[in-house]
Length: 161
Image (cartoon, rainbow, N blue to C red; front, side, top):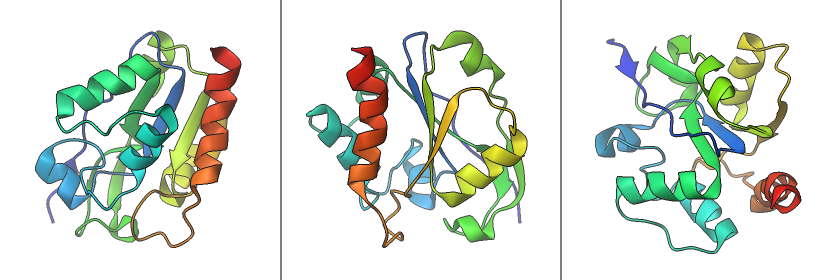
């Protein structure tokens, strides 16, 4: 099994919240951007929260993220994986958070799913930025609850606007 590479982070100095997934799905790797599976709830949730249409093009998705103060990345930058299942991840290489922390004005890190949360906590046990484990937006997660995402985003955006 050959190692697969994730995507570069999307962030700038205005990013207030960092959303970290685990690793791009097969579909995301095919379209070369985060949450490329149309069944994944991520873009519907985020765009619904901000009251905007889901952009079709990657460049427009990046612009939306930056305009809204959202940084996006995955905890794993490289790994061996079968299909898209987090359970099949082997030999994960974990992100270096330092560049984002040095640039962005992060108030919170939201970890999209259990694997992202567990790996992040292990790699950064003393992270001083507020963390929250979120219900995975994956279509494979039957316990997804959008209200938890909305509350977590409210914690960042209604206080800071």
